[in-house]
Length: 452
Length: 165
Image 1 (cartoon, helix red, strand yellow):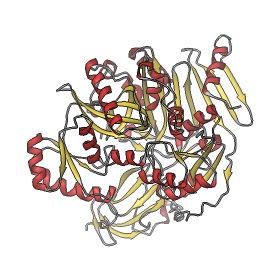
Image 2 (cartoon, chains in turn cyan, green):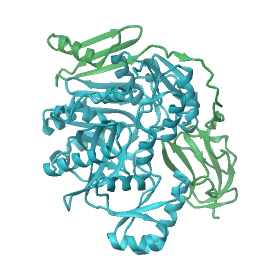
Image 3 (cartoon, chains in turn orange, cyan):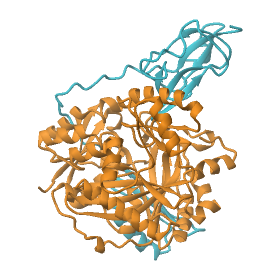
Image 4 (cartoon, helix red, strand yellow):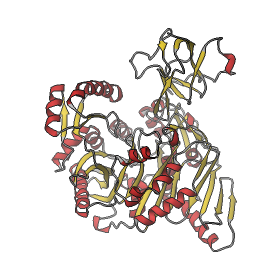
């Protein structure tokens, strides 16, 4: 089936990014927009826009009935869910199946297999992958026994959670009961599922992920990304490929990601996330994200692919256009997430109206954004203003390019974290490459700024 | 024809070979300014999509959800408050919550004693929960904003009767 009209069930920079690819491919776009975004850049660029409800996401971008109805009314062939919102919700995929609309993403079964974190761990084991030591705990006694067995400190996680939400670090047995009680209540409130599991807390770890693409039969990998620079589990800088890792370990991670996706007969674009234990030179399966990710442009830069186009081709029922041996990665890419956050005031969110937006332009520089002069930065949605991506022949050139590009980047009207990125790019440890997930906290502390 | 980033790069390649440092382009659909920094030689761009959104007026046949109530507006002037009471204002625009999560008891009720820095509510802005603190010791005299109501920056949320509790 050839897709001629796609409904974009997303907003902000990602909606703009999907429109760009669709324009190039000659596919019509319909933007599903909340009342707050009817005047956004994406709405100006889309062929048409349809209102799916009020500003509050739960009544619009998270409203499956409204999204599917918008696709039906606008006679769209397919829905692109983007990232966040409904992107990994099996109920949207099932509703699309019932309405005869193509869901640009994996199957309902695959979404279900990776959405529940315990099921995902079981699938990982079946595919021969090692997860972080741990498992489900049904009682406090069990949690004590398992924690003693895997070793302290531990992390408590919600079975229905993901992306770092609702995680609790526990250092010793005395604090376990209180933390378990709080985590159970929060998991119930946030995810409607009180079940918990625990994992060993890896203090010196790097967050490295492998991009995979499958057509339901064959799977290829598109290399690694390092996303270790995080604040409160939110990524701020990503790069591809992951720097300074043992090449044998990298190859093993590629193989593990493919084995996992093959085991699910995965169809679509996905990311297998690993935690690399720097002390042990070992890696563990964390979770799989069954969608496109914010940081996909760094992979596009080194592989020379348009991943939204690949998603569309696979959703149309096409076979992969490339075998693994055809995939050649070149150079090094870095992405900085530019957020409307006042980083000198503990990253306070800064909604408002953008008065001026100037971006760097040139070879190897890309800006994915929905921001232009006059744009509203709404308090209802996340603070991502855009992403600055640079591509160099090697990492040193990419870092240099990023420093220059940041100096030519200007947004006024709202506070941003641009200065933080500029300082990060000049930091010796970052320039050396391969920092762990605790690096950003140390970096923020050392500048005497209020940190996480 | 649509205008893409590749087109911008192509224009840039042409410009790079000239002595010009600035280019303005304006059509009905967009405007674009390219500017060369004379010191570094780096180019930057300002661009704006101008086309009006083409909004389809279709009925989705589903309830449009709860249209949020009119936001709590900032008080007209600082002295519009009641004599002797101290206002607690929203430091950010966002959704005001009186409790830590649905079903939990409110942080404070009328008559509650508060210390300086006691958390009296939460404002959710850009998916982040930001605590609202009492500015000084006293007793909650008025609650001016409903739970889950959208508030503008500087809207009055509560009033405190100051003094030792």
